[in-house]
Length: 155
Image 1 (cartoon, helix red, strand yellow):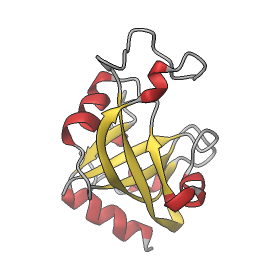
Image 2 (cartoon, rainbow, N blue to C red):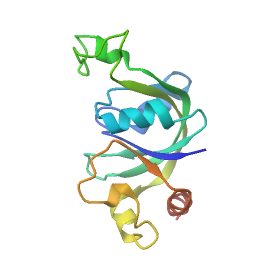
Image 3 (cartoon, rainbow, N blue to C red):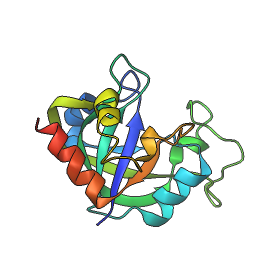
Image 4 (spheres, rainbow, N blue to C red):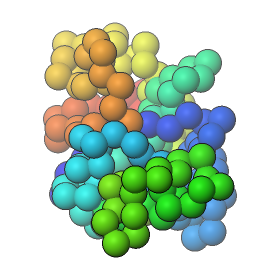
């Protein structure tokens, strides 16, 4: 099993939206970065866990845990000209973009904020979200990082 951090703006799609979705599941669509596309298409597997990170908000941070329930498949929003994620170059017979389906696992009682992650940099020093210039919406999380963040969520 692998661990991930998946970022979304709560004004667009937050952990509450996932918790309220039918069967607490949703497609993770709209990713338009090749490196992230490759991770979703080639590396994410059913059963992998991810932290749900809220970005571009008053209190950025990790708000809970989600699970991958469907491996990478073509992102149909790229084919729909009425969708914000439309990409005229992506075709159903030769898709450029992929997505995975995720399922709500739990929401933290208290988020692990970006400030709390930074305050624990001695044990999270390789966490990509803390690296300058990292703007990827999905990043891998190492086992030790996962365990430490789960501990922080309980404090």
